[in-house]
Amino acid sequence: MMDLKAYGYTGIEVMPDGLLPGRVTELRRERFTVMTERGEVTAVLKGAFYRSAQTRIDFPCVGDFVLLHDNENGDSLIATVLPRRSKFSRADYSGHAAGYAKTVLEQVVATNFDYVFILSSLNADFNVTRIMRYLTQARQSGGQPVVILTKADLVEDYNLLLAEVIQSIPDVPVHAICSHIGLGLNKLDPYLMPGKTVVFLGMSGVGKSSLLNALAEQDIMKVQAIREIDSRGRHTTTHRQLFMLPSGAMVIDTPGMRELGLFDADEGIRAGFTDVEEWFAQCRFTDCRHQAEPGCAVLAALANGSLPRERWEHYVAQQQENKDVRNKTSYLNRQKGSKTIWSKQTKKHGGGRNRH
Ligand SMILES: Nc1nc2c(ncn2[C@@H]2O[C@H](COP(=O)(O)OP(=O)(O)OP(=O)(O)O)[C@@H](O)[C@H]2O)c(=O)[nH]1
Ligand SMILES: [Zn+2]
Image (cartoon, rainbow, N blue to C red; front, top):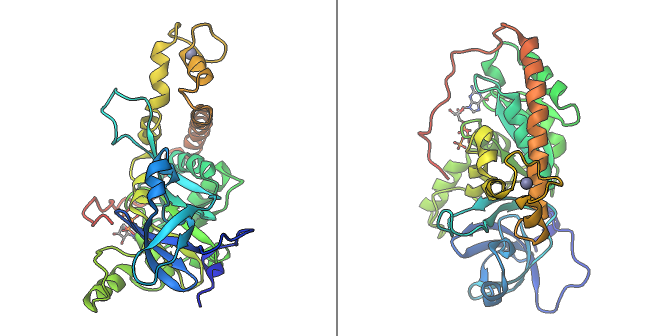
C-alpha cells in the first residue's frame, strides 16, 4: 500500500463512500495519471465536469489532490478536485478571436506546491529586475519563493551578485548554485523535505532541467527513454510531470509551467494584462488615474463585475512593484559603476533544445 502522505496528502474530514483520494502526477490530453494508495492509476474526468465547470479552472491539473471512483479494469473516474493551497495559472487567449470577447480563460498549470524556486542565471543574463518580477508572480501563487542563482561557475565572484540580490530582496532566501559541479545544492535541502512540492520558475536556458537532473541524481530524460524501450506502455517522449526526488520531495515540471517562464518578464507582465488595460481607452479623461474620476471605465467595469476585482488588484500590485524595482535598479546600477563582474565568455545556448 502506498502512503499518500508521501505525496503531500493531508487528508479530508469526511471521505465520501466509494471514493479514493489521489494526486495528479501527469496530464496528457484528457487522460490523467493519479497516484493513489493502491499505486498509480489512469483516470478521466466524470462527465459532470464538462457540464458544470464554468471555466477550465475547475478542471484538475498536475499537483491537484482529487477524489476518484476507482476502476481496477480500466480508467478510474475523477469526481472532485480538492481545494488548492497554491496554484500557477496563465491567461489563455486561444478560445477567443482577438478583440472579440473580453473574458480570458485561465489555464491552471501547477497546483499545491510549497516552494517556488525562482531560477536566474549569474552569467550575462543576470538581471535583478527580472528576478523581482518573477517574485511578484510567485507571491501571488501561494507558494513560498526561494531565489536560486544558477551557473555560479561562470562568474569570477558570485558573492558580489549574491549580495546584490540579497540587498534587493532581504525577506526572501537567496542561494547560488552550480548544477554541474553540485555547488550549493546542499543549501536547498531544507526545502526538499519528504512530502514537500517545488516548482521552478525562470526563463528558458537558466538551468531548470540541469537542476532537476542534479537533484534527481540521474538524467531524467534518459530514464524516460529507457522506460520506452522496455515497453512499459508509456507513449511519451518527456519525463513525468510530477517527479519524486530521492529526498522524498517532489518537483512539478509541466509544459504550461515552463511557458510561464518563457517570456522575458519585462514585456510578459504587460502582455498579461491586456484585459485590464483595454478599459483605459474608454475612460472619459485620458489622464484618468482610475481612482475616483467621473466617467472612469475601470471603476464602472469593477462595479458591474466585467473586470474582476482580484484582477485589478493584481494589476495595481504589479505596477507598484515595477516602480519599486525601477527605483532599486537605478540605485544598484549607480553602485555597480563600471565594474565588470561577470564573465563574457558564456553566451546563452539559444533555443535548440527540445521543448517538453
Ligand atoms: N556552466 C554551467 N552551465 C549550466 C549550469 N546549469 C545549466 N547549464 C547549461 O545551461 C544550458 C541550459 O540549461 P537547461 O538546464 O537545459 O535550462 P532550462 O532552464 O531547463 O531550459 P529550458 O528547457 O529551455 O526551459 C545548458 O547548456 C546547460 O548545460 C551550470 O551550473 N553551469
Ligand atoms: Zn479610469
